[in-house]
Each structure stands twice: as structure tokens, then as C-alpha cells.
Image: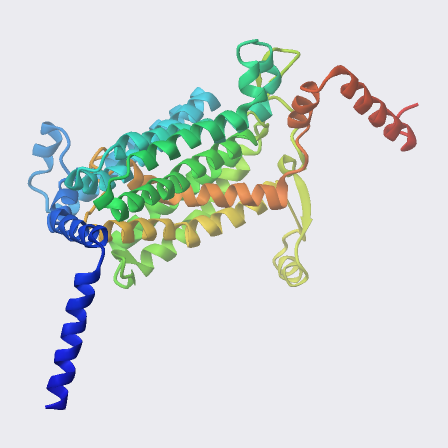
Length: 451
């Protein structure tokens, strides 16, 4: 009986509390409850995402009919092989066209990768009817590109841009303009918030910014590497291509041992075969490219010629050097009648670090992408390349490699860039340039470099 009386008192207390609540609080709680009931059912988000374009083996009618009698495994192998060679020849053609074509291609690839990732978020956006998500995503893409690539252009070509009066403010106030553009997008997002969708909108806002971090930042690093010399672009990209191709070949013919659950088709045989092939290929490719100034000279603007040039005296990295073999190897070489020294380009030794990263760590970019696709139960990011999928499916490892190369150059290779320093000096006032000139002259006189 005591327990019953206690419950009755508690129930009455709650009723009294409800009765004493302000009308504003009760109406707010009622509105929140109604909002929760109005939130659309998310059960069909998965089906919407699965409607995104997916890779297939379909090509032209002639090729499809020619391969129709083959098992699906071999049909996929042939289709992948054909389009792999087409992409490789296309890559060689872009190299022949020169650095500006490579820069333009990098931007096109970046935009396509961004579109493929954002499309997955847009599938969720459509079901909730959230305002402005797609427009805001593309606006932030443009803003981040303006900031990052504008920084590089100002560093390398600031003097050239300053010659045009209408471009001078863009150089002088580049960062302020970039910040202002971002703030406009930020305010735009805040004004687009809808009460019952706060969590979803902030999730998609974060989605956009993570996508920008993955795609735009990495493409910026790719272009920075390219400005250091085509060899820093061609060799890493070629290593990733070689590793992808050889890992697939070894896995296709010899693969039996699963490598990782995220990608059930990946095998240890393919992983090891790709690693060994990439190391060998990287050394051969590096040795070949080091022989030509076109590949090893940084991209710079010549004041004297008034155009872009790739002509220079190659640094020590790209000049043949004698290296003594380690002690134990010298003994083995002497027994076999080989010399105790080897002559090669120092860059070839650096290529070993690049090839090890591209073949051991690089695939984890692909595993990351596989996990992302599995989270949304999709097979590929798109269907633009038959047998391969979308652009992001082919460039997931390239982005990770670009960051490593940029960090590697900054940590172990890069010295102060005379071209960039000169660009910054030329942007100064005349009196500041004279002070720098006098200081430099005094320094060289003290070292005995000037008579």
C-alpha cells in the first residue's frame, strides 16, 4: 500500500509540473515533437545512392559482341586492359603536350573527383530537400581553388601579373579576397539552415569540407610537385599506375591469399608482385628521365625571354655520381669480378623511397576508398571508364602519393628556390630592392666572392 501511495504522489507531482510549465515551453516541446514526426524516412537513402552510375564492362556494340562468348572474368580482364592502355597512351600524350596540359588535366580530374564524391551526399540531399547544398559545395570548391592555386601563381608569376594594372589588386590582396569569399559561403550556409534538419545540414557541411581536403589540397600538391620539375610529377604518377597494373596482373593469375577484408579481391600475391615490379620500374624510369633537361628543370618564367622556360643546369640530383658499395657488397663484387663502385643519378636512390611508398602505403588510399564505398553499399564512384569505374576509382592512390612527394621534397630535397625569391624581391619597392642589393653585395665581398 505504501508503494502504491508513493507512485500516486509522484504521478500527481508530474501532472502538477506539467500544469505549471509556461505556455512557451510547452509549445516549443510540441513543435519539436511535430518536427521529429515530419523528418522524412531515411530507409530509401541506400536505394538512392545505389542509383548512382556504376562501372560495367559495356563498351561499343562491336567490342561487346566480340567478347560476348567469353566468361565474365575474362571479359572484364580484356576490357580493363584495353582502357588501361588507352589511359597510358593518353598520359604520354599529355606529357608530350607539356606542363600546361598536365596542369589543366589535373584541374579537370580534381573537379570530376569532387563531383563523384559530392553526388553521394547529394543523394541524401535530395531525400531531405535541404536547401542550397549542391550550390554551396561547388561554391566552396571554387573558393578553395582560388586560394590555393592563386598562392602558387603569385609565388611563381607575381611579377608577370603585376604588369597588368587590373590584376595588381588580385596579387596584393589575394588572401583577403580568398578569406572574404569563404566568409560569404559561411554566411550563406548559416542562412540556409532549416530547423528540423540541423544535424543533417551540418553533416553535409562537414562532408563538403572533408571532400575539399581530400581532393583540392592533393591536387594543389600535385601542381607544386610539377613546378619542381616534370620528373617529380611523372615518376610518382607512373609508379602508382605500375603498381595498380602489376598488382592486378599478379592477383589475377596467381592470387589466392586474401589481403584485406575491405577489398576481398586484393591478394598478398598481387600486393607483393606490385611492390617488386614498382621498385624495378621506378629505378629504370628515373634513370631514363634524368638524362633530359626537359624533365628535371623546374618550370619558371624567364624575364629575359618573357615566356615559360624549362631550361637550366641540372642540380646534383640529376648528374651522374660514383657511389661506393657497402663493405660486404664490395667483397662480394670483388669475388665476382665486378667493380666496387656504381655510377648512377642520385635521384634514382630517391626513387627507391618513392617506389616503396607507392607500392606499400599507396594502396591504402584505395583501401580507404573501398571502405567509403562499402559504407554506402556502392561498387564504384562512377562509370566514366568501362571496366574501371569513375575517375576517383583510378586516382584514389594518386592523391595520397602527391602529399608524400610534396612532403618528401620539402623535407629532403628542396633548397631555397632562386626563382621564387627573385619574384618576391621584384615585387618590393625600389628602395627596399636597393637595401637587399647592398646587403647581398657586402656579404659576397666579405666572403671574397667579389673583387
